[in-house]
Length: 315
Length: 144
Image 1: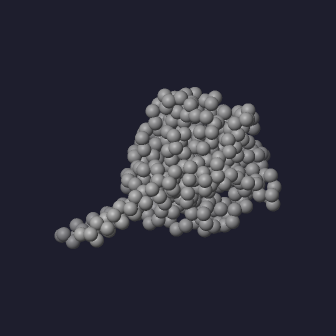
Image 2 (image 1 turned 90 degrees about the vertical axis):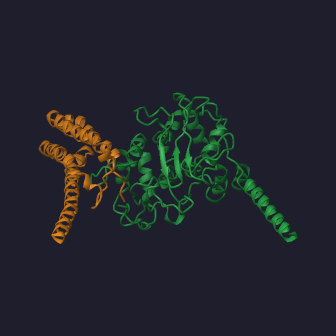
Image 3 (image 1 turned 120 degrees about the vertical axis):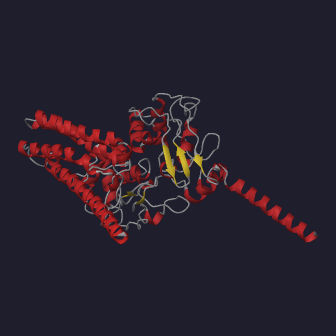
């Protein structure tokens, strides 16, 4: 009996210790201690044209505009994402103070973009690609924030997510972030020229190309060694192409071919891209030729990585 | 008798599978033809090739022919079974799918009537090309 009580006590202490450990490790403050505090450029007068450019490069409208209507600036959200962990709904990011992000400070916005955390300290699911947006510079985030301020408000209420246990406990995402969100802003490579660095920034930061064009591990994080090598569509339908210099990737494409695809949607064979790449092209088409060409130049510099094997075909 | 029926059934099933692969191959060929026909006008738009009215009109005829044939090549048993990137939405929204090809045919016919020289080519042809992307967005899956 006594032994049983002691064991119970020990297990209880362990559970309490575990719970406390989970609580501490999953806190947004812990991530900041480990990965650095987000710099907020709140002295800046936003460059609205640059903010619009980042809005297009980031593809904000592809997920956050209201489905079934044609206005790409109505950011009331609602689009559903069928992920392996449950169904997510893109929230309202319009300027409504209650339903959207109209009441957010620049600091709130910057921490959402770079730390994946709400002003109240709630974690966002990484379907919101903060793993890429964390690379954005403080001035670019300030410009994007300024541009979003000019867009209309929508009073549409964000739909709740339908995630399976334990993924419905967003606190747990704090641990995911400690493991997979490194917090490093983009740093230019001095050995490369300005064009390459611009492309690297657009591709890895706002453009978040790797988020779809890479396979993910069981925890839903990109496998670093297979970055850009293509893989199963995270939304479960089809297969996303390899965009490294592999034989079945972009080896035969020129940087100009890549820029052309981002502008018109046509491959060098005049095949026209479909699925979720079609809306990506609509956004990228609004960038400058110089931005698209820089992305092409950067992608051409990626080493060839073989595409991971396809999952068995389901009938 | 029973064995005979079973054999007949097996042949019928096998034939359906072959037919499904057949239409998948057919529609892929037609789409490849559309892509191939776009090569010349595409290069003309980019200024890599001189404008040639006859080639442009030939391409627009290929488009109209493809738009007519394509909607009939998606029977219910051809959702899978071959090398296809057809999206399930083709069968969920078959009216919308058919309408997309009708629009492609109408836009191609309108462009064929409007294009007389290089200026009218540059003004009208890109509009037809937009139909490729808008249809693929809804009715085609990503492929790798």
